[in-house]
Image: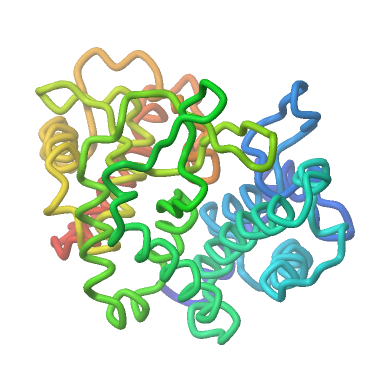
Amino acid sequence: MAPETLDALSEAILEAKPTQAIIKRQKDTGIWGANMLALAPSAKEGIKEIGTIPQHRRLLQTGVSRAARPFKLAERILFRLLSRDEDPALQFEYAKLAKEGGPAIEWGREQLREAATAALAEAGYQEDPRIRGAAHKVASNVSQFLRSPLAEKPFVRLAGKTVLDPEAHPPTWYSVAMIAALPNLQRERAGFTERLGQYLSLPAPKKEYAVMVGKKALKPDHFLLGDPIEADSKGNAKDIPLALYTIELLARLGALHTAPVATKVLARLLSECDENGIWQPKALKAQPKATHLITYHWYPLHPETKAPESRVVDVTFRLALIAKLLGRAIEYR
């Protein structure tokens, strides 16, 4: 594709109404929503709008140029999170939690650093020494967990509740996305990457649990204790966007072949494609809806309209991208 065509497409993406709706919500400080991680507003938690890291990642997915001003503004803050800056203002949504004391402060900063590292790795900073240093730290923590007995028994009982063992550092959606975006780290830590892929193929525990930080019990929305895909015996996924996101991450890790549920779901979705590679399941009345908010930045990129084809655009695109990641030839028509 000619450079001038790419430039025109980039400008069109930047000026598109959905893109501008996100950009206009960003403050001059580079922050969205006065928080970092929120995937949706929550009156209970005092969250008024989606946070900085999800919005940054969504703009990346939509194809906005990495040289655009919104990225420059946001990434100043993200790199400060990596620098272990102790400014209390950088605690964001964990500011109240920080009142629990030192361990709670460090726990909150660790969550923010991990998510910031993932966002910056996806933004193309793979060889930046700050990213590599932070990424290896995260990978070491996850590797230690995978090698320990906690990988099989990650829970303890505390005050009548099932909680994640305080010593456990399981993978999260952010750490897995970070590793998936860092092929050099995967090569350097091949054994760890293989163990991670195997762990993500195991059935996730069904029991509900909490994460205790000080005296606070938090929801474990971003932790991964095995395969997050729910599907029936025929490969029909309960949450298609979540399943596709998981499959793409596994493909980037070179670990899809180790995940039987993900492989079955992918086979099912591919079987529903027509001779032109368009996903065309029977009796599709609406665009598949995501039930897990972690895919906010990733799906859907194309808004549903009255046109029937709008229902299948995102799934078709993701299936084609996954096929490419797996080394399969893609024909453009």
